[in-house]
Length: 520
Image (cartoon, rainbow, N blue to C red; front, side, top):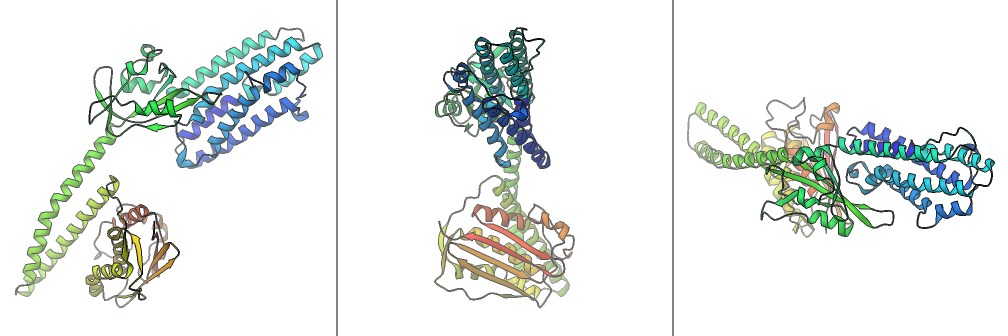
């Protein structure tokens, strides 16, 4: 049954995790929609290939094209929603899509409309020949509407077919319910009066209520969504969905009071259900238990706090070691102090990077753009790597930047991005080599490129370069690091609405490119 398969494949497409599977499902769904459209058009205008005569009586045409039934409009809307799902981008496919809900629930209404058409044709038919011809047409499009007519003879009552249609509708409804029951999130469907019409198994598990206890009851009698900060009921996301006809999301720090009084942190959304007349007739409320997410967030917060606490003793140790290095001490002792000094430096660097990563992951980094002189920015950047330039005996080559040239950006984030890229270029370059920095400005964008002739990045590992804790297999043992720098740089570039990429050949060198907007 084609309409049912469209609903099923749409659900599978939304919940598929594998990109290859999604591509397959999208292709199959598109073919089904094309066939459904061709069948519908053929029923109206005729199609010899599909054995569709296209001869409809005036009364049947009224049912197809005039209110209150207007079956043609209903089918076209069904097709439109199916194509919306087919053409939705991967990142925008959502289980709360109104189009998806209409595909799952709309087939029954179309089937009911077709039953009226069948009844009208039976009333209008003047000859057994016409009855047989139209029944053949309905058989040809049975996949479109999910109806199988069994014809034992010209005079066999068409009411038998109508009965079978009802059975098919019931079966379709049962399968639709099974689909919704299999969804991992809690799904609750309410009508315009907020009375519950569907309550899936995940909703039962999360809330403690059974479906048989809640069907027909008002949602607010069953599910109590509470804001943590003021302990007030939080149902505005549902109200907005019903009143404004748009999907709205739960506020952060919302809990659900379960049947037995437990408090569970929840998240997700409410989406309107749009009737065929374009008006909101209810809503789909989706919620999920986010206890583990909250625990993970809390763990990140505790980790960030511990990292901050570690900064003070590490800085104190570093200051004392710097003081000791400035005093006159024996050669062997001084060498040990230098080793300790560099070790503490590395610990402090790792600690600071872990704090940065934690702030990025928690969404705590907010760019603060201001107008700054580009020459001053690069002078500070070059000064920040001056020590390792001398240690590695590497020369930085950069064309002069006009002193009056200014850009609008977050100076702290920009300097951090460039420091990471330059530091890597210097560390991985051979002694007495050059690292070149080019800056090009065109209209409202700035392209910064850093070229080195160092060890390069193995080709098989290049897809991992911007991931946390990545270190190339060819990195020298003396180069200490945790593999967080380029992850931080990429995230900061994204926050500045820019792009970062690279080209690299092992043993030949690497070029990192950063493209950033320099105005609002």
